[in-house]
Image 1 (tube, rainbow, N blue to C red):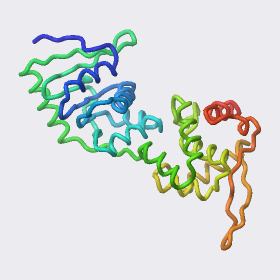
Image 2 (tube, rainbow, N blue to C red; image 1 turned 60 degrees about the vertical axis):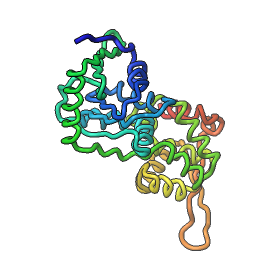
Image 3 (cartoon, rainbow, N blue to C red; image 1 turned 90 degrees about the vertical axis):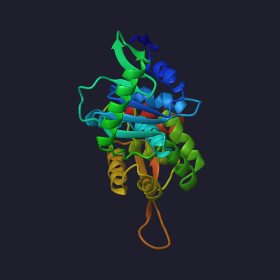
Image 4 (cartoon, rainbow, N blue to C red; image 1 turned 120 degrees about the horizontal axis):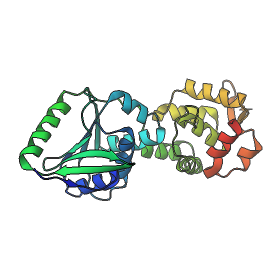
Length: 272
């Protein structure tokens, strides 16, 4: 059985496999960074994508999907039926890409990820059948994050196109959106952008809950936290019936003067 090196990056390996136009591509036990790169490459691929079935260790999947940028792009692929996620019970399995005609082992060395591939008919058939059995017995991974396309569209439709543009610019300027002490999460980003555009707290929190980003209560708690930190403020807006609503606004001149693509970095510098 012969084998060949199929590229020295996840993108190169995945693209080479996708160029064969398989109907189904299994991705088994990839490392976290590889999951991110597979999602990125699949989103950027210009041809027709197969059904991608990713089997990953649950704790790893939860950690990777803790980044809103990765999770929302993953959700895009899930929502359009391209990507399916299930939980791999055996975390000792080798990282493999498997189609009916090719088996590719992902190998890491010196910061590079290579794909060692074989198209031996007997081996690939056995590997594909075994992977299919593992898939059939695996439980679905519950990805709760909404797809980024739906987030953008509803933000534009329900809040304002300028708010959507600012939200997109902020995300594009960030490497991660985790909110774990090293960055800003999606709720904080939404509130900062809303405050920059003087949106009502009720409107942005209702949008956020409806689209699946977080509950109204989470938006309210985060708003209070950002107020206590001196990043945003509110002003009361009377309404015909009921209690006045709160309009969000930025309370730090550095944030007010920052363009959208610098809002996240300026906010982080204010918080540090």
